[in-house]
Length: 294
Image (cartoon, rainbow, N blue to C red; front, top):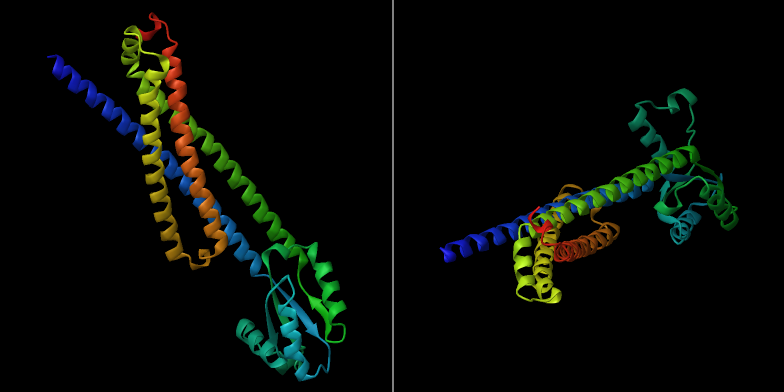
């Protein structure tokens, strides 16, 4: 009879530990998914900024041999991601493909000047940077560049929208993280609550608080280890799926964020399980004999 009760007690303990691991793994997986969503938003925001271009109108009569050295010089600028020369003939063809209308039939001349299209790095795409970029370019190449064409209002609107979306997503991620940690704490507390009589029995036979606490903390450590491994595994599988279907994510920026997210998941998994276990055991160690049965 006693052996049967012992086996039932062991099964209850194992089931409680299994439930804790599953619960913490689910929490870490949800946090990983939210973190991936945040990283995807950041990367796509950077990609969106890099779609904006700056058109440099070249001076009339610029010698053809000066165009290539100009492009090579522009590529060395810290704010330039790429530079592409657009001849008047190329500009007409692009206009015709987009609008299906040949302006030369109306104007009888080619209205497009020779231009260089600059792709800027994402950190320089905001309205405040445009005057500084224009001044720097005109100062460096005063004879080759006649002026700039851009839409600073669109730059600023996109920047504000991306910034607002980032703040909202970050706030949601923080709030859900706190909620998830609260759920982890409650799950572990309920798991240890089911073994409060065991804690009381060990106290009655003279076991010290450190001796009683040690196996619970070790179990919490293993639960954190297993949960973090499973949570990271599912998060990385999700990241691989996203990389397969969104090639623009294949960038050091995304992988750096993924590394930070992985470290955060591992740290939260260990810290939440260990600390929640310590607090729960501490609570039940201090319970009086009358309250242990409540």
